[in-house]
Length: 426
Ligand SMILES: *Cc1c(COP(=O)(O)O)cnc(C)c1O
Ligand SMILES: [Zn+2]
Image (cartoon, rainbow, N blue to C red):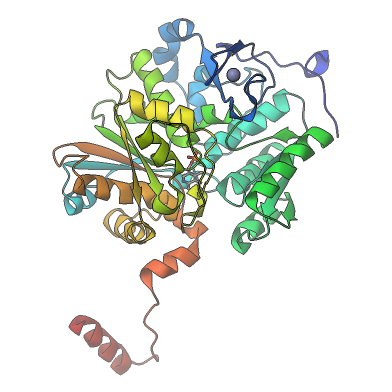
């Protein structure tokens, strides 16, 4: 396994221009920019935040951005990537924001926007993080990258690795769903089915990265990946600058997505693109509510068991809860849970009232908006942007639960007429 030192002249990339260092969320210690994962003093819980020199960035950003391509690299000053590195050719980010009045009036709210992140190359929000992850691996001199996941992080890493020419090793638990494992194999990842749970796969992956010298695209703890997720917040500020929503609604697993979006919005306020930050509503499944519990109690997070159809947010031990809760509180936001029934219902209503088909975790924010209106957390005269984080074709099994079967009939007009009149009577 080739591991090229950063000191090697031939392989040296300039460090990201505006990154000033990294800071621990727990103890506040600051570190120089380097190939690190978590705070050495605080261990695995010591998530690091990437710091930037905003005073240097601010004067030129607005004018320079206006000439750039519409993908998430347009914010390169606000990303921890080297200027000399070749960007992946896949189109990442700048997902569309739709104004969906029929959806809004159905739920009794003034205005709703849907930002469809299922439109990324491997069909989920995770491509924002993986695209930064593969660049960090290349910059730090690795030719192999690994992660443990059954879901979107895995398929995203496999796809992005294929795009840039890295080898990828993906650790999945025994019960990983067949379609997702197949997607990994198609992209050429080496898929290791671990005889055990997700936690077993996670631990084995971490040990393997140390032993074999692979870069760890660890979903919850790698400080650079969340910077990729941040770009959705940067985009919302630009795309909605003239009609900024009162609320941004996001489904929550590890908490990197909502924490990143919050950071992105805060940065855009600081840099003069927007004059306020929308309130964040974080939505978890009832069967995976560890973060909501911590948000309500104000105490440290206590891991829970998980039981929900929204597999992408079925996280019992959310890794980035401090960042997520800090961002939600800073925005004067809220957190709520929704049931699996509400999620299945939201899959139908979102698709039928907007034309956007999301997987269960992808429409959890939609379900959360409905519930927050009922609980009067969000008011009818406010506006909300809902992020659909993953495409519905990722999980056909759940979708079938929501919608049932098609009408089966012989190929005659009589049969069709009979079937249609039966439909009308129903
Ligand atoms: C990963 C994921 C989320 C949640 O992101 P976290 O960073 O784990 O909170 C939400 N929706 C989908 C579709 C995902 O894949
Ligand atoms: Zn620390």
